[in-house]
Image (tube, rainbow, N blue to C red; front, side, top):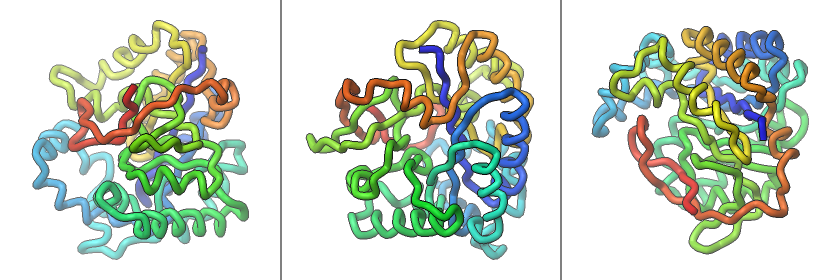
Length: 299
């Protein structure tokens, strides 16, 4: 299937304000579809400072230039600077994305809180965080969300189960190789998972010997051979929407030259036979180029 679904994670206030409009313009110019998953509460990026104590984190920072991509103000939000409320300050930008014809969904309410804590939290905490995101999304767009993409691919079984209660059409919380119906501790979760199947640019940059000028070529080599179920590529408003926009444009042109249709996640889902999706377990596992563990599809 020659489809690549473009999944855009929007983590920060700056990414929303600067990266999102640039991505909308670029995607329209290339006649490409995409889905934007928004962080909807306060930007507490500065509180991620405690991650420097995690093994391997400083090495990642040195290779992906966090300061260059996020800016000093973003790295101080929630600590030395007040945390801007993305959903309140950027509601017009968020609505403009859907008005431009792009699908929208929930990334999280508080990116740092979800990414750093959800794995070990209980059902009440998890539902509360999701309810905050759903309420803010509904306030901004005037209707309920139908899709979720977990911040940092961090998830627990309570969150997976709650997707059913919320009536989501699909979720994209995992890393994997093909769409599936998730199971957790042998429990079937009747919400299709559309996992990210391709490495992200920052993950590739963490590989020894990788340079910026090689990123697009490397990814295009991975998609040169057609996949039976297509691909999901995750990009970030803070990276591809700003400094790495030229690399993203190389990818868009390259994928279209390879014959791929670049689509939103809902269109990718519609092209699948949902009734025949395999059941796969979701487990937290390590992934090359990332610090810590991620929710991962296990056959």
